Image 1 (cartoon, helix red, strand yellow):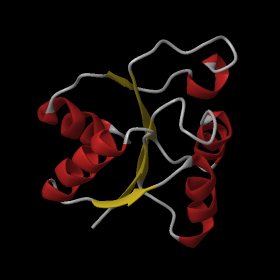
Image 2 (tube, one colour):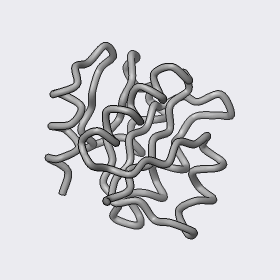
Image 3 (cartoon, rainbow, N blue to C red):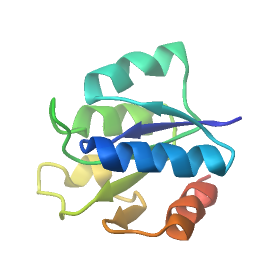
Image 4 (tube, helix red, strand yellow):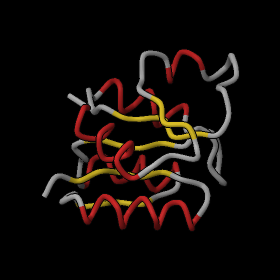
Length: 112
């Protein structure tokens, strides 16, 4: 079962994402930015879904690390990125909240 790391600041949305991904056959790791960074060496994901801003901080460092490891990811957000986030999230597929189940699973399956 391919592992998908989910970094989302709203618990309800994170749990919904996890349920939908598990139903589609993916394993899920749900984390804060710090926990997500720590998990990359322990159990590298096949892909990731990141909200730009989490409770502990913005996911800029995590996005850069995923890019350096060539782990594809999707940005899931309700906001446009600020200029300080543009580089880390450039060229990355986006899902805008609200989104549908088919949209989510299609975006994950489309990742390289």
